[in-house]
Amino acid sequence: MIQDMDWEADLARYSSSKPFSHEQSIWAIWVYRFGRRTGELQPGLRQRCYTKIYWLLFRIVETITGISLPKSCKIGPGLRIWHFGNIFIHPESVIGANCTLRQGVTIGNRVENGAAPVIGNNVDFGAYAQILGGITIGNNCKIGAMSVVLCDVPDGATAVGAPARIIHAKSESI
Image (cartoon, rainbow, N blue to C red):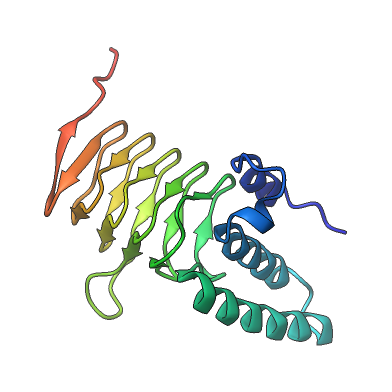
């Protein structure tokens, strides 16, 4: 079996020794990682079969959990989803390592065929946060619950409100 370091980092962020029986969000993350591994297979019958299995699992898990993590988005290792449900990630989004999502988070575009967000590492999203458009969220940021982020957020900042405003940013050392 192929070792998947990203999947192992995801599992490490779950405290339970049996996350599959205690946290439905891990199902969506596993299907996402399976889909990514399927895309890396050599073209042929095996890849086609695994792709069909992926799409079936994706739709089942998406329907049961309300989490949409398409295999085309790029998600770094260590993804943690607290309180599953109503989570939508745009297929062209990029999410860094060790990010945390809570229920109701949307990371998507603002207009049809518009650009998708790019998220840095160690970003913590509050419940129902909406990150929309071709924006960049820096590393080590916090996005408050129910915030609607429509502009870039610098490294180390906290963004809250609708539309979101920066309430705290770590000062840079010179």
